[in-house]
Image 1: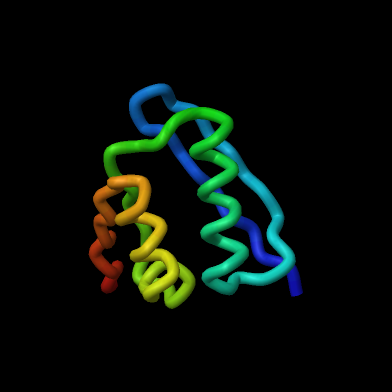
Image 2: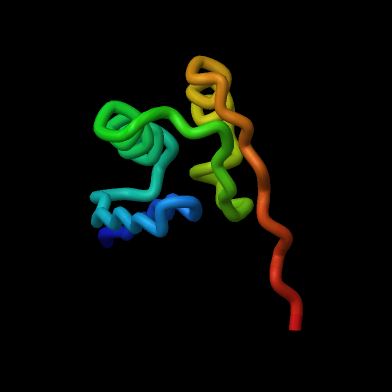
Length: 77
């Protein structure tokens, strides 16, 4: 099953969406690197607490590009 990822630049109100073949850390990191190459490296990324964002591979990419990774607060009703 395919998964979609949405990246939003809150300052510019720019939305980038892409359907990815899987939701694993390698594919998500590749998607982010492609965004960094096309635009520029952000100062921070806010994500949910999904395992594709909270793992060693993702942390290494954030460290390499000097990006702060912020985790959103889980929604509770």
